[in-house]
Image 1: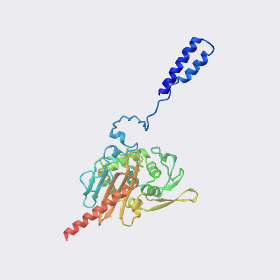
Image 2 (image 1 turned 180 degrees about the horizontal axis):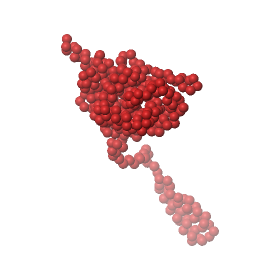
Image 3 (image 1 turned 90 degrees about the vertical axis):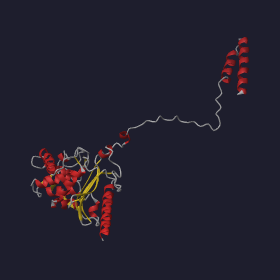
Image 4 (image 1 turned 180 degrees about the vertical axis):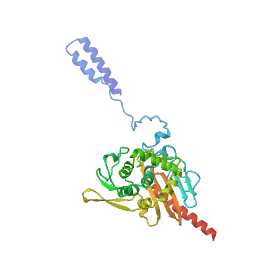
Length: 340
């Protein structure tokens, strides 16, 4: 710094001399002084660290913190473990477990809240189709009208595929085939215009007061029901041998155009588990509903209805079902021990 100040002083003296001389050297001297007078770069302090300014904290509402595809139950604040005072840590937002023979409630969690039920809808579709009296052997064609315009899902049943009504019902219940379910409703007497009212009339007849349906597949989030409603639905569907058989089959092969065959499998892995004795089941999923599962299973020799709505994660509903069964088995073992 001292050297820089000395250079500036010397330059100023030379410039004054040149001005007095007024000669030809004045421009050159002035240029030299300009170069020397350029400010020196600032001396950086050793170990200096540049700190980024702190961003202002913005408080967000709970709704803003939710993921873009949060379920209806999650947005309502129902998605939490241990709702109520029960020690079971279930991942499902709404749960109801019933002893079917005595109608006694074994476990409940948000049982009266109406939520989207996704493909659980297909149990209602099956009841209406079977009670409509149409032949299960009658051929039904999959057409462009069965395209999913709600969620944009695909299907292995191409347009132009012709299957029996029975095959379509089998695929709808076992593999949750959406085009199959839609074609069943579309080919009901009067078409969808009469099928949807028939669905709503059926659930009202069953006492499902919180239920409402707008399509036969469950792709619409406006298809809603409470866990209490679904216990009634499972009980009614369990009385129909065709629904029991089709919903619990492990796989089903159908013949399509060109002599080809397509194999479909059950969406519920528990039907292939030899430790489970399942009389009826149905799975469901759309983003608004989360993972759903309803079952009528034999546990400790008792027909038990399990309803799980809005489970978190792909396998959470299966884990919840396993936890419920384990808890019931332990509970019964304790009661038996006390009785001895």
